[in-house]
Amino acid sequence: MTRDTTRNLMELAGSTIIPVTPDDDVDLLRPASAINVAISGKVVVTTTGGDTASVFVKAGIRYRIGVTRIWATGTDAQGIVALT
Image (cartoon, rainbow, N blue to C red; front, side, top):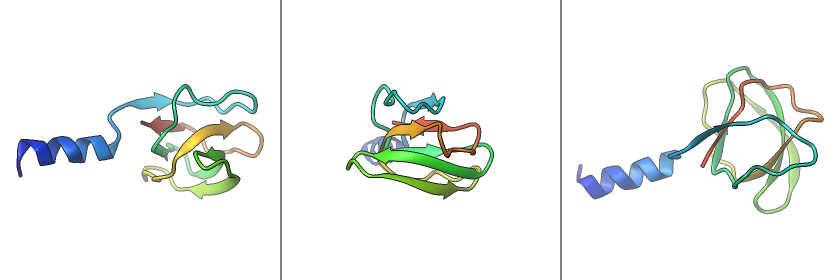
C-alpha cells in the first residue's frame, strides 16, 4: 500500500473524533461524516441534506451518515461521538 493510499484511507475513516452532547437548539461545530456510540440506542439527527430522523445505532459501529445536529429529544444512545 502506498503512502498516498494510506493517507486517503485515513481521511475516509474520519480524522477527528468529537464527543457530542445532544442539543435541540445547536448544530455541531462542523458537519460529521459519521457517528459512533458507546451504548446502543436511538439517535435523532439532522443530516447534511436537511432531513431529521431517528436512527437506531449499535455500540462500536461507525455509521457513515452526514450529520449537522444530534437532537437531545428522542436520543437515548450514550457516549456519542462525531467523526469529521
